[in-house]
Image (cartoon, rainbow, N blue to C red; front, side, top):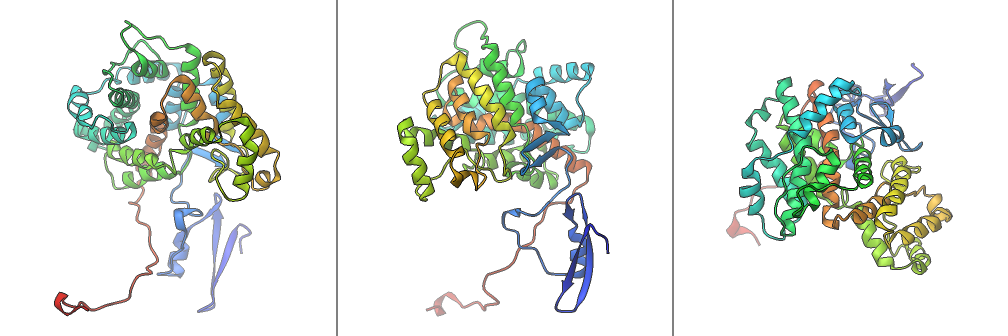
Length: 424
């Protein structure tokens, strides 16, 4: 018997068999061979690995996050979002020549087809949610780029990757401008990725909008931190739809739709609402007592995977301090700092390993820069596009089978049809 294995005995027959432990997992193939028709019941796939991936390494107990082996701390401090996007998709950091070509390609594909803007986006109701518009617009791109269906053509695949990463900020800004009744702003290809997005968001009548470099850098750091996060709900949606060999726009729209759900992409919005509800530093203690009594929830603390301090939260806290030096302190910041101080000194939260996560401070930064709460999920989707596409490329290269989970049937057994006029 191998030391790195699990022995299973079927008590019905007395048969025993070994399953090797490889890369921290056990293959279900041997299980299927010996126990036909017996399925794992794993609600929400909490202990099921549905794929093998080399994109992101995450150790929730140790608080480690790495993209392609590179610690998130090093990338956030030294890299840029577009370089990180290249790393995620290609597996290696670019050479200077590759970086120059990549940035140029992204920069010059930021424009969207005029019909997307004039006939599609402007067809939404005046108070449409920006994220709902983004989900629909991303899906609609597949009808403008018919070559997107050629997913096994490497050159064609590259074009769609560049288009999606480049156009997401343009679509996002357009959705915002429409929702507040402002005219569309065209991309400015002389600006960096983050600065260009801020220009499309805030430009009014000036010939050129130059965002504060520190704010543009802060947004770029946030984009790096949100670029990928292993097999979360949105990424799983991307891989599920991608496994059917749908075009990348349709798959990315599915991922956006998953992100639109408040349980996935709405956490930083929930933090802002919680801080507004608390109202002042004096109310923090009573709020904490209420949470411990089961009368509320501490938003922005704890994580589905992390059982330690979210490494992104430490970076984002420093970024928040830098942003507030420029914009002035968000009045909610003092409440947030007090809340963090009280919670981290209370054994109730520490024993449950509830530490601040990336969402605890990100919403405060977005608010300070000027983004309305309705845009928070959209701001999540822009950088996550690179991670989604990295997983999409990976599953195609692996020739992954179409995803088709099993179920445990708990409904009625066979019943016989009764004609309508004979039913009681």
